[in-house]
Length: 254
Ligand code: MLT
Image (tube, rainbow, N blue to C red; front, side):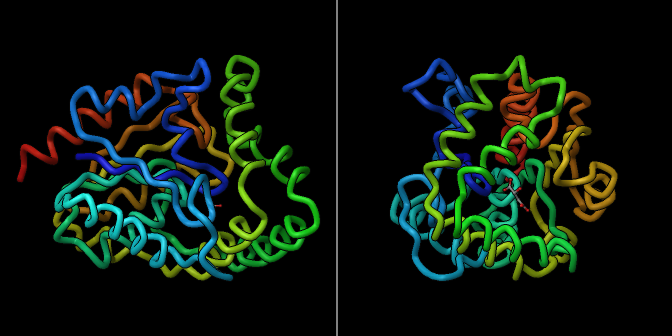
């Protein structure tokens, strides 16, 4: 069983969307070998905004209640970017349920002081007009060399981001700003951890992520030369195969 947690301004539609030609996404491909659950985190996709701030812990508790209601007890959690922050908060509280963890373009480090200031700046911009912010941000998540080839994927990511409510965006920004370091979760992990890292990632420097990948006892890395922050679109086969192999190994180890 694999749980997919999307990133900031995303929804479960990014892992699969039957309404576009981007049909055979990560979720469909993985579901040939595993049961796959993707969840819209609070304030994203079909899940409403729950409050003024969505901490990573609150989002993890929401994911846990979905999984509990399905009666599922052990899973590999794959978190894309903000979804990875949520996955770490999840593992901190519910380690016994985690068979493996994938930080997909994500980190256990907290925001720098500069990044925290930027979260406040962005929250203000978003409250006035989030369309410009979204239109500027989304293309930056892709490697430059991929933007033209992946026109449809960029458009899809933009459309999902534009459908995210202002309140949902601001609550996530506040939650990310307040998140603590979760390096200890990696250090104490009794489950394997896979790091998927994009060499062209404009949000997270690959060198820092490789250093972080030294922390877990059982650590695996996939470094994508030609991907930015959106590996499931930029390197779909490579990321799918790495996740399939990693997940099989996690369940075999149990
Ligand atoms: C994401 O893609 O989820 C965000 O870029 C994460 C962040 O802003 O830290």
